[in-house]
Image (cartoon, rainbow, N blue to C red; front, side, top):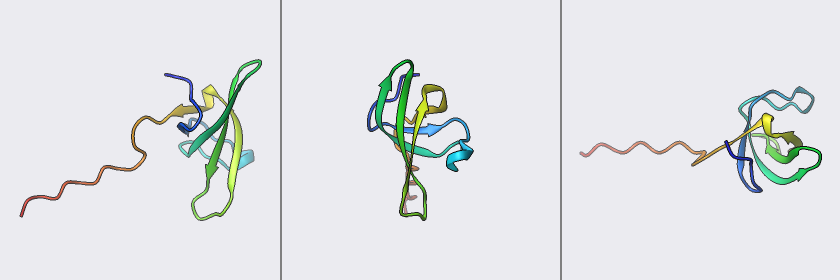
Length: 79
């Protein structure tokens, strides 16, 4: 698995209760730092809210989302 890059979508692999973030939520990597270990600043948008939650997360707390985050539309059957 590769390290997240800036603007990658990532999915939480664990709950972060102190920030009200749950495993499976998707965020966007906004920056990254490597000292003493690689960490990523991730922005989360909460559905139905007009604010964002920002968190510094380790590589173990996120997984890069490859491909589209939207479900593919089902093909219509021919008439």
